[in-house]
Length: 411
Figure (cartoon, rainbow, N blue to C red):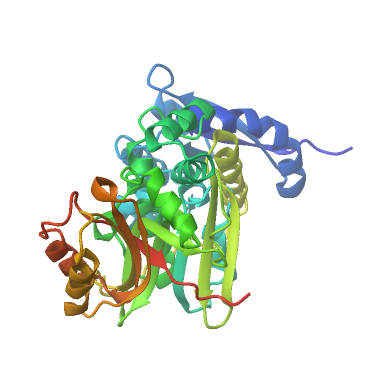
């Protein structure tokens, strides 16, 4: 006679989009998990603003799933749970990007698991790959599309030609964007995720405040039109890489050439490319926005905590954060259509050592536009040139610049 599997009780903090999806998914997968682990997971209690008592849920649970988001009271609950000897699974990227070192230290001290795969790239298992599969690799760079909301918006703008505001409203209607999408579209969400990835890839503490980021709010349909003319596609890209003995971690819109491994990632999908001399490069992709997808990643972490591997180790390096790096740029200029405009602009670029790779000119009179791509240059030199160009009387609006990621991969 087969004995019943031992119950494994999960305290669920939060019952929003992800929390509700997790509560629905868990009983569907419980029998299979019990077959694999000998433990049958079940919800032991739910905490929301209007129901549940944290202390009672903590006492009755073997593991806490923190899905309420934000910093407080999430941080307090996670610390109290680990101090009580409970494993914790979280999807809270802002919490880890701002307080990760404190929380990982407590997890090591208490001998419990703090699992966070769902905090970075939805169902894309990049955390597990960095911590386990590539633990011995010397990672040189991570490129990522790590925000499904912004990727959906940019993909739809490129596909339909619709303006940013209209596509954002559609993303909200489809459930890909929150009612308040600020952190998704201004780059802060992706910046928190890149801080976490950089910490794991380079074995050095990285705080959200050290990540330079910008969002997609100023992107217009004309940018995407010119991108097509230049053979480029536009993505919100997070990058963490080794630079001159330190590391650079940043998030910004960037144009990609068609053969770049991230160029074909469209819609609410995430993708992360990891580069290392030992492996060349690998790209992982999958859904990045949506409750069921994130809930699936949370459940994977729950199973990992039920049969735990080693916890996140303490960092052993202290690499300098490098803010001034080499990039190519797309430059969009609204100009007065008169002789000598292009030469004055290229003259300023030349004074700063910037050479032009390609130029597109459209329109006449008050609608004249110059769009160009420049060769790689130190960002400080490029932005110094932009400040000087902005003072020219022939410009009708401020210059618009977007980074271009050069094609570095063979077919």
